[in-house]
Image (cartoon, rainbow, N blue to C red; front, side, top):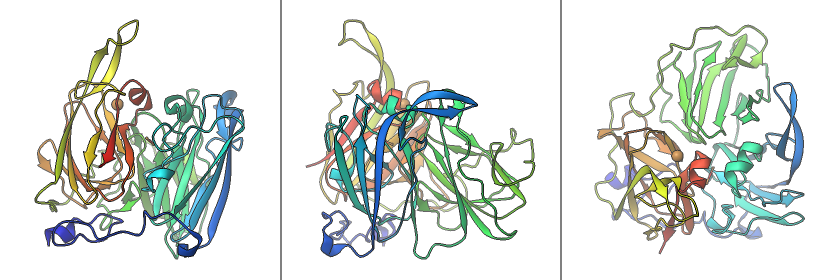
Length: 417
Ligand code: C2O
Ligand code: CU
């Protein structure tokens, strides 16, 4: 019974022994096993001048726009994206943030592919087998590339899809918050889903005003039952997504940026309490009673003495990339990570290729809906215990999504033996 509860959001149920049944979803895609239509996109990366905050600023853009085109598909579709690089000298790739794609489609240069240099292209193909809110971004020199604009929204809708939606990717370009891309309207009473996406390096505090709302999904995974809240602020970590549901009001705003019809957002959200997805409800989730592998990651700051001049590095277990040993697992292992933040800043943790189930924070079991995350803030002094089933073989990046931190050492790998 414990094993059954442990099966992940997109996973087959575990067997009695805690091992996963064999999964077809990571097998290479061939024409024969495609059961939905192929959705084809072409993304061309290039330098561009983009309007932000009333000025034209230098940016790096997909198809001349920031964010890049929305990649939308329905569960069962095959997504095929041709990435071309026009003139980004340092190369580009596409990483499908939060989408648990087969390893060779994960877009990490030097690990799963070479960066795509100017004049070259790379074709990504993966099955849309998880509905939800995701995003894509370059993973080549990502601390610069994402900030400069090489990102976009990836949405996979269930079949059939219902209601009206607005995607709200939040991004700061050259110091300016980009406007919400879509303003929508519908008859009052229509169900509305806002897909809030934080594509910046640091936590954003979101306030949705104009109508009471519930959180329906986090990091692309539906909560089990809507969260009990309205008039709560949402803290979304770098890379994270919250889906918020409400019914169509006269006007709806996210952080004062109108996303719905016309009207005046209500003021005074600064003192709203913050919704804590780990600590509502009373039911604790302790699905696994044993772990095949357990790892501890101690996040800190240290001096990197390898260069000509000493510089500060963001470290994991006292080491900085590329000197942090990979953590190895076997296919089918149930793996636990304990992540300890001994530094003075938050580290938004992101494991590629898997969602992790939150077990506890600071020794207190997580309550509320089981929370399967791919991006979570480990704040100064916090200790997070998370676990997942190793069911997606390959070599996966495991890093802080404050991307300058990752560039300054806070990046390691999870490797299947
Ligand atoms: Cu969104 Cu390794 O990244
Ligand atoms: Cu960090």
